Amino acid sequence: MSEGREKTWSGRFTQPTDPLMEQFSHSIQFDRRLFKADIEVNKAWAKALGRIGIYNGQELETVINALEEIDTEYHRGQLQIKTGDEDIHSANERWLTEKTGELGQRIHTGRSRNDQVVTDLRYYLRQEIDRIVDSIKALQGELIVVAENNIETVLPGYTHLRQAQPISLSHYTMAIFFQMQRDKVRLAEARKRVNVLGLGSGALAGAAFPVDRKFLAEQLGFEDISENSIDATSDRDFVFEVLSACSIIMVHLSRFCEDFIAWSSEAYGFVEIDQAFSTGSSMMPQKRNPDSLELIRGKSARVIGNQVKLLVLLKGLPHAYSRDLQEDKEPVFDTIDQTKMSLDIFKAVVQTMKINQEKMKGSLTQSLYATDLADYLVKGGIPFRNAHAIVGKIVSWIEQENKKFSELTLDEFKQYSPVFEKSVYQLFHPGYSLQLRNVRGGTGGASIRYQIKRAKKLLDK
Ligand code: ARG
Image (cartoon, rainbow, N blue to C red; front, side, top):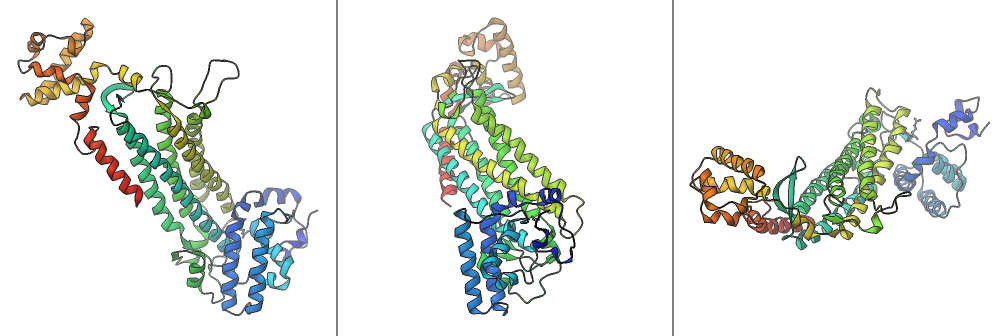
């Protein structure tokens, strides 16, 4: 049997924990990710205890120094985890006690792992949010570069995966930018609710020592202090918000990946994914697959799954802490890792992707100008619904005759409507179609330049 007697809580126990139960219940394999946060939270707590006389000045210094030593030694791999260490919080307390004896035994005064773990998690998440936001910003910067270089690059825009209207590649690229912008704002919003101090809540009823929570919040950089200890120790809605924001990021990325996967296929040939982000086939020598993008699409499922895991975990959980809450960690760590990596990979793919302007242009069919043709009639005084019907008839006829709009004679046009004049032929050029759409938010060059200007401002903020 293992070292059951050495556990932080083993006083009332006469028998050691079953080894299988230890294996089942221990979280240190994954919550060691909270090591650094736990050290910082311990330092702040020790200082707060110093202010209420649990440690005198000399003792506090010893404790702080020991915690710093633990930090260094842990990263050097000099500290061993023992079978009895349930989680990173118990391990840090053991190391501190081994270094400082009785002083380490005082560190948990007025505190529970319930308020400690939630504080660590908030501290950790705040940092990770900032790292994800940095990745989003880097991607946005790259998107602006692509947009600036491709205002004149025209490709067919699709709805229902059918050619719809010509668009500029910049316009498409800026769509990614603005979706990422909202993702960033969503994370910043979630961060406000993450950045709240839970420490001082005890197990559920609040610390029975007059710890200065304002001081603790300042020490740890929390902008707010939880108002209720049951709420603070039992809820994980702040985690849920971050996982939701990450799910949305991944769904956004996944859809753009899908576009690029299609565009890089033989059928489209619009873009070429760099070899560094493609893989081959073990069987078919000719293959070059866009696995980077497929993996982002696949990982979005994983991140969405993590969000659902957390919701299910909380549903029906009594107040306050139950051990179920330990299960929140792995989905959090996984979502953070996958989202960050997906953003970085997506950015690199965009950065290195070859854009085949000729292929894009070559795939434009004249059917893309059907809406412009109807609009032309509207400008000649025909109500849009009638104009739509007239152009519909022209489309139907030229489909039968296997002709293009530009191949119709003016007389043929006039058979459908007397409003048609020679000027109709200028419609059948992609550049012309784009310039019709300089409305704010449209795909016209001036509109795109305005989008880029706005985007740069948002990015500088
Ligand atoms: N490892 C636990 C967790 O992550 C720490 C809290 C344990 N608290 C308790 N009362 N058993 O949730």
